[in-house]
Amino acid sequence: MTIAAIIVAGGRGSRAGAGLPKQYRPIDGQSSIRRSLVAFIDHPEIAVVQPVIHPDDLTLYRDAIAGLEALPAAYGGATRQASVLAGLEALAPQQPRLVMIHDAARPYLSPRLISRAITAANTSGAAIPVLPVTDTVKTIAGNVVTGTIDRSALRMVQTPQAFAFDSLLAAHRRAAEAGRLDFTDDAALAEWAGITVTIFNGETGNVKLTSEDDFARVEARVQAGLGDIRTGSGVDVHAFGDGDHVMLGGVRIAHSRGLSGHSDADVALHALVDAILGALADGDIGAHFPPSDPQWRGASSDRFLAFAVERVRLRGGRIAHLDVSIVCEAPRVGPHRDAIRARIADIAGLSIGRVAVKATTSERLGFTGRGEGIAAFATATIRLPWSDND
Image 1 (cartoon, rainbow, N blue to C red):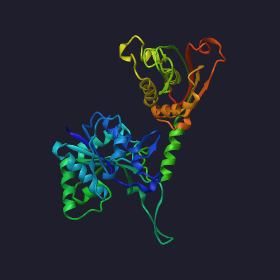
Image 2 (image 1 turned 90 degrees about the vertical axis):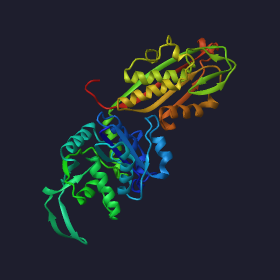
Image 3 (image 1 turned 45 degrees about the vertical axis):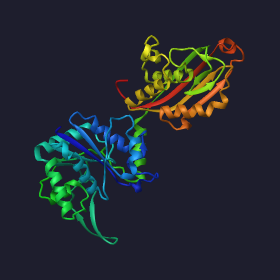
Image 4 (image 1 turned 120 degrees about the horizontal axis):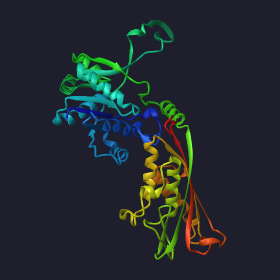
C-alpha cells in the first residue's frame, strides 16, 4: 500500500441546519460523507480510505455507508486537528507512503483533482489545491475600510491536501506535544513544522458545504443539471394459481389464491421496473432477469426494483415520480394502499409523496373481470443529465 486517504467527518456542522451533522445530510439522494468516501474508494491509486467520525455518529455513519465495502472508522477529537491525528495514528501500522486529507463536507471533487494531488505530492512531499481570489479584499476597522490587499499573492485553499505520510504524522505528533491545537488545516501545521508546501490547481466545483445557503445552491445546481426529463411505462400481468397470498408492491396480502410467476409474481413491482427501464431505454425486466434463469425462481421482486433504481443512479439521474395502477376484482387493494406506497418508496429511496398507487376493477370484463389474474400499469418519471450520446 502506498497511498491512503483520510476523510475527516467528526464535526457537528450546526450552521448547515437540518438537525443533524452536515456530512450526513442528504443532498441529491446521498449524504456528503458517502460521496466523499466513494470518490476515493473508486480512485485506482488510493489503496485504503480511513474515515474519522464523531463517536456519537456511529449509527449515522453505518447508515451512510450501507452497501459499500466495510470501512472501520476512527473516532475524532474535539478539533479537526485532533481528528486528523486520530486518522493518521489509525493508518500508522499500514505505513502508507502518501496520505491525503479531505473534508467530508466537500463531496463534489473529481477523480482528476485526486490525481493532481497525488502527482504534486509525489514531486514535493506536501501539496494543497488552491483557487485564485477573484473578489477585491479589504481591511477594515469597525465599519470603516482601512486598506485594500493585493490579491495577486492570495489563494483560496481546498482539500484534499496531500503529504508524505511519515512527515505529516511526525508534525502532528510534535504539535500535539507542544500544545499547539489551533491549526485550521494540515498545510498550516506543516508550515509550522518547517515543511515546504506547494500548490496545485483546485476546482471551482469542489465546494465546501457549510451553511444552509451552500446546500440550497448545490441542490439548485443539481436540479439545473438534470434537465433531461423522461417518462417510461410498464405493464405486467400474472394469472392466479395455488397459494394463500399475493405480493403487491412489495406487500404480502392474504388471499384465497396466489399469483403464478417465475419470481414472486409481484405485478406492481414488475410494471414499475419496466417503466423505469423504459425511461432509461435500457431494455425490459425480462432482458435483465430472464425467466429461463433458475436463480430468479421465487425471487423477491424488490431486488428487481432496486436494480432499476440503481441503473438510474449510475446514469447520474434521479427518479422524480412513480405511479402504478392495479387492476383486479380481488383482493381489495385499498386497505393496503399506503403500505404499498411506503414499501415502494423505501425500495426506491424516495419520499412517499413521490409514489402513487391506484386500484380499480375492470367491471367484470376480461380476464381480470373473470377473476383469472391481476394486471398492473405503471409510469416512471426520471431526470437525467443532458448527454450528446443519448
